[in-house]
Image (cartoon, rainbow, N blue to C red):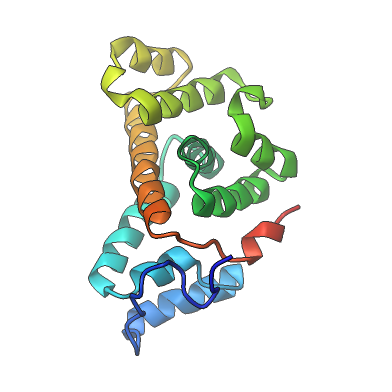
Length: 190
């Protein structure tokens, strides 16, 4: 395992001292989670990059949407499972366990979402996210219509595509830099 003091295999130390607004954000993480996620530490070598990352993440994962927070985390796990991103599987698997109250659901989604006890709406959402991850150039109107038929609005489809797209990008960065999940994630909500 990697050195837990360094969030990636790259030698990019955090800005020291952190700007007051960044320190406040990290303090909120410690208050709410008990730690600062390594993905934030990894980006903190450049505060502008950290701010861009957190702004996009917070908008996609926490802002108002027709998708629940759990559904967005489910997308994160399924995309990360296909991409085999260790960091995101551990971190977002913990979020699925927490938000669903079901430790098994997080594990099933990590292994194979197709065997998970999902409703038709969630299945359609995850099928689309999986297709976007493996064959985005092949998506056509029938794929979007399947989401509409499952009850998603066009705005919801936009959100599904953006969450899946964000995690495809962040999975690749995390894997390329050997980003290490915080050890705390492994035992959360089990």
